[in-house]
Length: 601
Image (cartoon, rainbow, N blue to C red; front, side):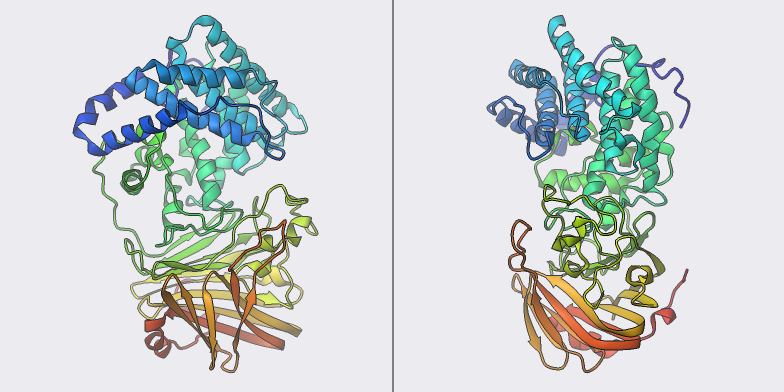
């Protein structure tokens, strides 16, 4: 990152200077008559703004220990009503936004104890102030500007100096980007009137932000999962795009390695069903939604695939204001062919294998390695998810209630690991004597290979199961001409232990003789077959839990249990659409994981 000694030297005169300049807005208005997708996006934004005209003005209401829902609603209304005002010039949108801005500026504080609340509110108020600046009288400007400084920037600077809630500037997860990003946007909004506090804020935030941005290295993955990738990247782009429009430069932040490839992560982590690879504290059956940040990333790094993918979402669903802000110069950009398989490194490593792109019925399997201590992490090293026939068959249940006692006690022995959805047993991972993985363990992808008719990955899970095991490894392969998935686990056990293979599913399960089972969901059928040990059998277990945990209604576990095993042990299960299983099974011959073809590490 380049120096920031005189960070405001190139500050753009006047307003608006954040994200969408008047010049860029005028250009979009000239194009809209000849661009049906752009016209559709504008219509979606204005329709949402019309709905917001009738919503009650925001009030200070905590949900649990958070004001975050109010802050996020202010951000949402700011972008919608603000863009509707700037596009149409109709005073009703401006006036309703001003009412909301003045309401939150009158709050006693923006709840700095949970600083995400403050940062998001500062961001939303700052964008509203900037976009409406020329339509506000000076007393209104002063009121809003004072709140940005008093509730946002000064509180943020206190956080940098060491208040109990100011830890976020030392971490490398989403809190860093959201808190620093919100403060950067706020500082740029008021910089000409409050240069001292703006300079101080920018200096501290710009020094802290790279701690998180480096986590995108080496190739764009995000340790907290695809859901939090969206949140972290959204605020990364708010910060970088605002620096770009306000200062004419992002000060080299966008050159940090990994950011240029970050857009690949949500694309590969989305299965054919539209659901994400749902590891970490992700939402229930978390589906890929709009990610307008991909438009900015696509422009900045010349990645037309990011743009093409996101424009498809904007065309098919209700578009968001940021689709308009970062609408591309070339809306006819086409996605380039991508490899079927992908490996991502970093704090959490994942491998994703698929039979085809653009086919809702394609096979897709994802497996993870990494660090159980990652923020929002679960005890899920080696966990896999599986799509086939348009159905998510093996799934991660996602997060539980963030307000449950001890939910954030994530070190060894923490109460977080007493909750079912955090524990290993809820995930599709190996189990030894029913014990959880070591919360402090790490795992690495030790092999990855992609060929025309097959892809596979191998994970070394040994550290997660010590001292019960001298070695644990899991291989996941898409094979038999990419018509079936093999999950193969290998153990070296110094003492007798029960070995369990399990898969968490919403499907109805019919256990059959001969180590077979058929899963049925949404009228589709998936077959499961135990390849090794030959005499093993499937069983079905419930995932149901008692409140206040999520109860997991209708969720089951397809399980193989092998009691009293010692020495070398192998458990291998083949999964395929029911009508493809016989042919796939006939072609599969087990090979030790050490001998799976392809490069090893």
